[in-house]
Image 1 (cartoon, rainbow, N blue to C red):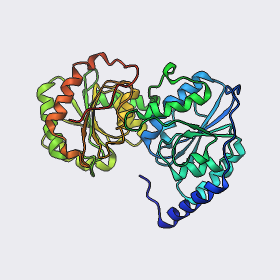
Image 2: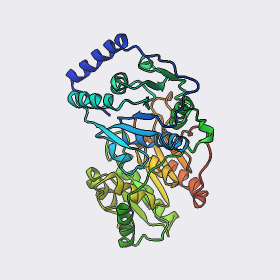
Image 3: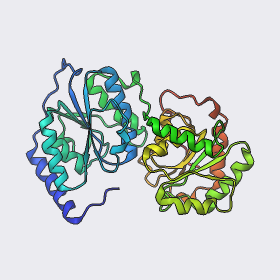
Image 4: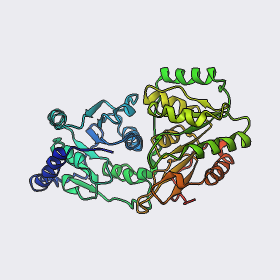
Amino acid sequence: MEILKPAELLLRRFLLRILRFVVKRGRPLPRDLDCSAKKYLFVRQDRIGDVLVSTPLLHALKARYPAATVDFLLSTNNHFVLLNEPLVRKRWVYERSFASAVKIILALRKEHYDFVIDLMDNPSATSTIFCALAGGVWNVGLSKENAYSYDVVVPLLSRRETHIIDRLAMLLTVFGIDPADADMNVHYSVLDENKRFAAETFAKAGLAGKQVVGINISPGEGTRFWGTENYQALIRWLRSAFQDSPILLLFQPSDKAVAEGIAKPLPEVILSPETRTFDEFSGLIENLWILITPDTSAVHLAAAFSIPSVVLYVQSNKDLRVWEPYGSRSETVVTEVDDLRTISVESVTQAVERLTMIAATKARIGRHPAGPSVL
């Protein structure tokens, strides 16, 4: 979540009010426009998961228009997600400061983009400013409060009933791409060096060739931390139910002490090594049989790698659908209050049992079904 200094917040609000009256968008898009060799800028400056769920649009666009030039505007929070993505020419990194914004806007205007595409499905002051000032011929975005900054406004599907990827996929229709005919699965490629890191980690721990159950405990605090006792109870159940499946405990470096506390009375649990980069962490995820995790970017990595997953969600706002794994086998366990600890261990073990009945297939499904049930 972005935390702004009061002065920065006031400045952005002021700019948005001014831009509403100053920015005059609404340039019509010719029906016969050839989109094949255009320059595209995708704006996605928020979180890691936001970038991962945007990768289907990138791949669909490049599959249809191989000669297109595609750049991304990212932030220091998420730019590394596309570090290994060969379809992206340039990654602009916004450092969340006024000076950085001015520097990037000046550079963007020199690029003369044909399309600037806002990938946010909720109004963002930052993306509004970049769209308004980037100098693109056409700005494209979903219908919402900051639609005044777009030339082409795309209908926003229900945020309650429709998966985030299907909502974003509507943007492709502007370029003559039918999402129903495109591969809308999440994409992520692990560097070869981190594939080796994962293989060596599994070999040293005696995990190679085994059906490893991964449990991601991060974030290790706040409303999305399930609790030490809950994780320990789940691990004991897993060891009883799946005796041939080792358990790998995954964590962010900042949560190492929490992970060690969970594993202390459970010597059979294997702690993952500290991962220095997101790509190292991704390499470990790629080698799992099943992943159990709270709602983090690991959810979308599991989808990218077709790893079956059990995901724990806080859904205090029922008007917003959770971002469950798209196109991969999963079970979702949801609490309607703002505390993941209210999810019972039994609910999670039941979800694991349901998942393991189909996990061996590791088969993708076509379009994502109706939203998750509350357990």
